[in-house]
Image 1 (cartoon, one colour):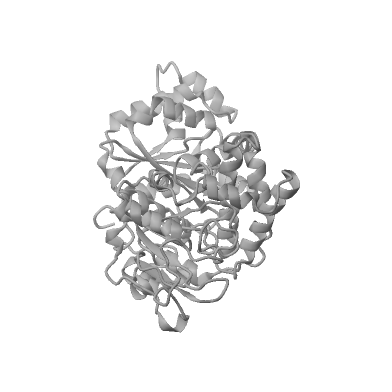
Image 2: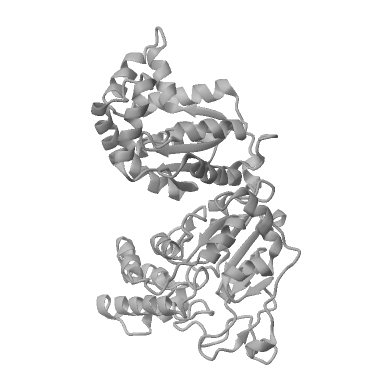
Length: 497
């Protein structure tokens, strides 16, 4: 749905921005017997030829597309918007709608007219999206479908990232998308503006709109995407106000629910029989390797950052991935330790002191060693294990290394139970010989990770594609998810892997 946050609309908006989505026919859909008829007379429209080879990325709307609950969440959002305008801004009930019609979104209008200062934008976003999501139910069938989809996926929403993630978690698909492109990314404009699609493509690192598919319940957004050059899929075929069938001849695919996409466009998915052989957590080796052409057009090392707390299993997964993907596993921790013990190194003593006390080595020193190592290796694919560990690390990378390589994304091995960290590190310490694999250093390392490393995940999720992996699962389950992410970034695996 074109969502409410900014453009006000929840309740049923196939018209993407009106207070009641289906109170009027959307632009491009005529209110006559050919386009608006009894639903039994018109089947869903599919595309038997559109395949995963034709697409680089699928952009999926959140509200009323990822889930459907008879517009109950949309009504809650609409009421929250109205409440903000009437109670906090002392405006009449229809003011937000007028702002939408004149400025594209209500929030954009509030900012452009100076009704609220920019620093209140977050107050607005939080207030209008702080609604219960009790009516959104888990959808295991949708999750199973997404697992078989052999194309990269992003959620593209006019709501906030936080709201979209809450919805995705309720549905059970929060780990099946590379990320969320939200209203902040879009500068508070709706998906009727070509600028929104340019932003989305930049974020997803794709360059050709013809290789993008927009899946949305908002016809106006789909028509704008079509005009921009994208392929389009309408989700939701019946009007909220009278139950009549909607048909929009301009869109490529029409389905009533998102899960029906697997029947309407079967070549976007790995066949059930083939998929069952390789497991529910892994894309098909044949079908899933679809990486942005943009990444391969740049003749620079293709870097994937790998982060996670001590004992999260980063090294184990990176060692395996390096063999499978013909990549170089560069552990920043090992790099620093090697420098520490290198005879005659002017930096050895400095590094030793920082590592011993579980602190982060100064960023300028770390970046210099990383860049020197990368250039010496002349590798095309690099797993940068243990970096960035702080916002300062990331800023340093952007200053000194950004132009020398192409950072594709982030693997975040997430262990929420600190007892797991402690147990793994102490077990490793029996054989590793590392000075920081001891009970005293563990406390400092965990403290450093929580205070310095966790905040950087938010920045990384905004600047790149962050794939969060539950590292408390079995080694093989973690590997399945790791390979799934690397398939999307690097494409073909090493021959014979």
